[in-house]
Length: 155
Image (tube, helix red, strand yellow):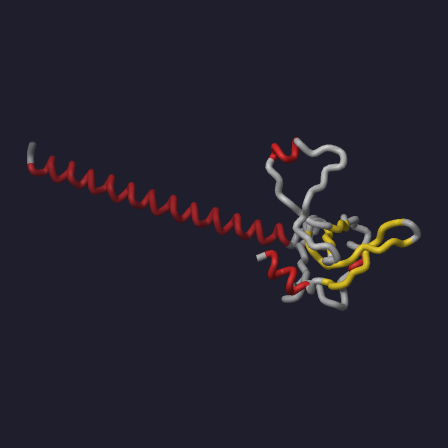
């Protein structure tokens, strides 16, 4: 090949390269123009009459917290709880339990005359003594456990 033919081919390749780069720049420009057009359309959509912007309330730091002024305890006043009185406890092996029958005596861990435990849903809340009221058993509370002491026992 002659020098002129090589230069023409090299020039042709250079021209092809330049044309390809120009075409790529043209595509980028068109792509960014499409994005700008979509953003403009989106902006007009927000102001369109068919759409309505959402409104939110400002959040307050104390929102959702109960205070003495707005606490409504009436909501929980009708919840039933189980109050029970425990005379005492003991542990027995199963073979001793199977030998119990009518008239058997089981020794408990409490002394006679000692106050009994008053439990609400299984949690100790007071101590008391048995009384009879209109031929039914009742309980007289002698010592109520403070909430702080109840929390200590949970730990």
